[in-house]
Image (spheres, rainbow, N blue to C red):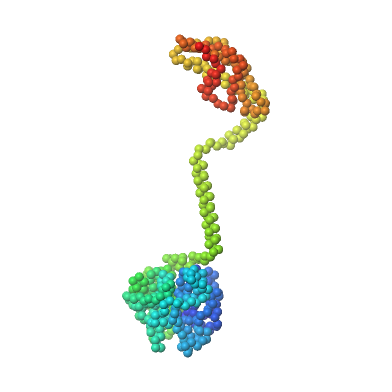
Amino acid sequence: MPPLAQHTTVYDRVNHVIVPFGGQSPNGFSKAINLAVYCSMFQAWGASNVLDRDIRRYVHTSVLQDKTGDMIIFGGASDPTTADGQDLNAGNGERWFDVNRLVLDDARHNAYNTSSNATLGSILKDDGQGTPDVIRGVIHHSSVLLNDTLMVVLGGDVYVNESAVMQPFDLLHIYNVDTMKWHTQECTGDIPPLRCAFSASQHERHIYMFGGVNVNDWSTFFNDLYELDTLTWTWRKMPTPNAPSPRYAHQMKTLGKYLIVTHGFIYYEDGTNGGDEDIYFYDLQKETFVTRYSPSGISKRELDTEWRVQRTGATDAVSAVCLLLVVLVALIAVYYMLSMLFTRSRPRPRRQSRGEGILSFVESYTETFRPSTHHARASQDTAMFATETKLAGLNARSHSMSEGTTTIIENEQQTNALRESKRHARILDEDAATPYVSRKLTLSARIPTYSSRRNSAHQTVHFTPSTQSEDIIELNTLSSHSDDDSLDEIRSPLAITN
């Protein structure tokens, strides 16, 4: 990067590069070379892909249009020190009249200008409305881009009849970079005195202007500060306590609530001139120059910490895949949560404890391998219990047949014989291969059954042994019966006699 003076720079936040353009160099310039840029991500200078195809200029202005990535260049002059050694206008230099734009990002430029097919580094001349005569060839001016569309040109001077004519601040020229048309804007308030080579910067809706010099004598320097409200187009002179020395050819940028003034050519009290290497901060809230700087109130975007990756087809595809995965994971999570919710709402059986589980396993295991005699004994006990239950039900039914009447039970010996016959119950296996749990418990025909007759007078019930000697009563040991079911089964072999 060669040493430069009276050049301009713009900062592209999308590509994170500072791009200088034009300027003077003490060693002059060689043939067209690649423009040097500074990358804020790597904090290093390097050669860009932009070729310096145009003749260099100085004391011009440039602004960056974010949506197109174009550097809008206006005004300036060229001489043998900037024109590659060419003798322009018989050594008197050359002025630049029209608006030009340098394409710093061809993707953004062609996306916004669909009819254009510009390449990176192209310098395009705007073919819209021509520059007004009063500012054709203006130098030592400043430009600010409002709303990424309107370029406001402040001050400066033009040569008329070989003399410098400075531009007033009560009538400003504004250029629409989208429609490529000029218009003027009248201003009121505290109109600043005529000056050139000052600096201007924008903060929200206001434009600030500091310093400058009268180019008619080059001895009147300024260190005052003015504010222009772009809604009312009114100038206001602001207080400047602790202001630095008067100066010109300096730079001023806005960062949060601060105006930062850097360097410049100053006029000392002893009548000498020289450069200034200091940096000054003006607090817009306190309206004074301060000696201490605080980053509070400065956004991350202004500090350029929110770096953005330039979108391409590949990045869009990766973003779409990532979004699809996020949606899929979210759906799986919702399904799992809903299933857990419905599962918990259903009644669940009591879980066995560890001891109960072990005991149940041991019982089932030993039950499988019990000997047949044990099975027969267990089944025999079950048969006796069932017989006793049916007998008790039969007695209960015989006593409840008629309320308030006397019931006479005959043949008690037969009842005693029935109880005695419980010892003769046995197990009849239908199939030896059938597991024990599926076998049926049968009662022998030796258990007597009964028939009954009822007297209408006293509701007397007589029980006599039935003649059906071969009837078999089958009980399923796996099913459980209520008292009513037991009465139905015992009632079925009885014969009711009149």
